[in-house]
Image (cartoon, rainbow, N blue to C red):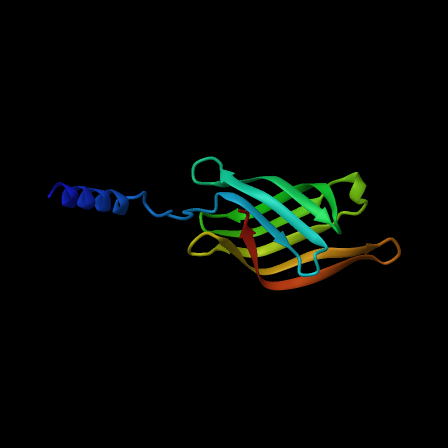
Length: 145
């Protein structure tokens, strides 16, 4: 009888393990995107700002394998959507003002991706003919692991 009680107790304790990971519940976290040609990569963090406003920081940009300092401009921020995010190179080592702009951003239901309706980025930048702008549609910015 005692061994039956021990088996029941052990079974109960094992079944009462920690709760499953509840997953993400907001856009707060680290994010990354790389263009299909691999020429432009950006990362940024979304953190809590003033009451219920999202704040962007720690932005980086990599242009054709070269890391650089970046600036970020964000417009129309809401809890689940963002109107526009522009990350541009602000680094003398990158020579030109490479940038990537995301338009009409929305969070996925599980907050693991940010869906982007349209985007554009500058690559390449020629000293003689100037910048080439590339257009993208229906892309996803991924949460960094």
